[in-house]
Image: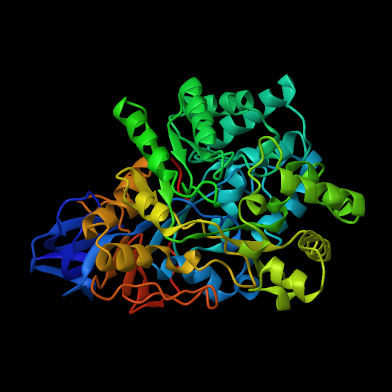
Length: 533
């Protein structure tokens, strides 16, 4: 009789490849998997009873902003915040998205970058000279699950140029390319951009092409929050395609959406375009979260020039009535090349998610707050940003369900939460609910996806895109990351009012062969690693 460290017995194996589920036992020995016939004669130090349950690879969340959550410590970040991902079955998080991360940081810009990181990630997480420093900090902190990181273009730009609105000089671009090359050599997973966010929005296409070419040399993808996901989404998609073609890098479009009333329905054009590119041989994919609301920083609702120079310069402009009038006009009339979320929707669709010093504003729209104060919405937003030193997160109700469903159903779309796990407030429920929501609402209830298709999008497809060798599939020799769930019961419970409620039906989660969730509760094990690609 063979022996194993852990045996998952009696379940239906959905192995992450998209193949039909089949009865199988799964054994773990030395952190690696073996797939066995049902009832195989195995002795194990620990046995998980998976009868009537699905056994799948651990979920890979391809789009998070969790770069610093584990570094804040439970006393600051809150246990529920840190554990939300693993409780929904996520065994690997990919951070560094939308052009923003915690490395690389150059000494010349370190104070300003620390201030910006506090706004983005919600605490004093620190900044790191390179990917190796970032990895060492996460290893020292201890993690329940794994993390991999992209290299953020905006962070590169901040470190070399500072938060300024101008093209990079040739020597600055060379320095950014060298820093990116080092990070990718150390194991970072690719290059990300957030071309609606400053300072990334200050860069032209040629700058991004040069950087994406570095990623291409390493065989790693260019991952982009498009320059516009609203009225100019098709134009922005074509820019991303151009960057990919000219650089040679594979293209991955982050949280693909067509948001704002002027773009609703345009997935009927963007998705066929992506499909045609794929049919012609281009390596292009996307990810999606299963909600019609987005979440980002309140400062991103302002025209790009308002953020030129960083937080101090923004605060000065917000305190100037003439500058606020100029911002109002920009929102009403638009600015060439700017997404303009409020102009495409309205302040009544923008609610406060987190304002640490003004919790009474959380859950209320900017329009409501302005009406209660008999004030103009822009002035209300400006006052809140100044009082909070820029640390305001918002939720934007900007999409329609039909578009979300089309992207979810696309065969090249994988799942990413776009979770922003900042302490305090009312974060978007996607950080705690994305994966069970896809399995419960969109697969089981609506039949938009089969169970096998849904799992594949969360596992094998995601791991392959980001070079996570031996993950995302259950097969002999693969890394022992697993999730056991009840397909008939799995569902998200997180809401905009109570956003960290854990899901139903996620019964066990295994990372590196250790059980980190048992009977829906964390065990306290911290086997997670920083993954290199």
